[in-house]
Length: 245
Ligand SMILES: [Zn+2]
Image 1: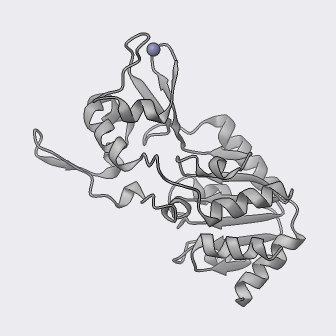
Image 2: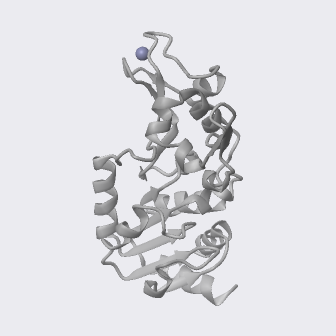
């Protein structure tokens, strides 16, 4: 066992109010690629290539819904993805009473699929979709099976994924819940994020606890602030440390 994993195990042992903050790197180990790494979408009519960020913006959703859903179904929904060792370890920590919340930037619902109960989904979830007119609920399957732009069978309104698009604000209740959890935590573990995407960097500033742990394959802007930095795969690191408990 590496010294780093031993140190993490020790921190987990002495902590009783852990919060995990996770980014895209947590999902890539379930074979969900970061959509920002895609090439975007070439538009024949306009003869321009839209970037991934443009494609999942509110403006794009309103102006080009067909292209939006084409990209969305292709690059943001992974119905066959399964929780990985990181998701499972975090659910186990919560069951043990040590972990109080997961704050995630991912929209795949894999933390809940692994058994996590308290999850703050900063950017929403692809598993929830609502009619923009009558607010009727639709699941992921409905979106995947719809042709072109998903339309509400009840009222004919456009169905929108409950996902925070670029230019849209984050949900206030979710943000304040996440801030409260982080502010009260004795240990904050940040994993699978390089901490450049808003609001990740800002949220860490609320942490007043004892141990700040960073687990990421590459270096992050907060490495120098952390008590423990582990540059390795999140599933392997968390899986091993939690198994040691
Ligand atoms: Zn409707």
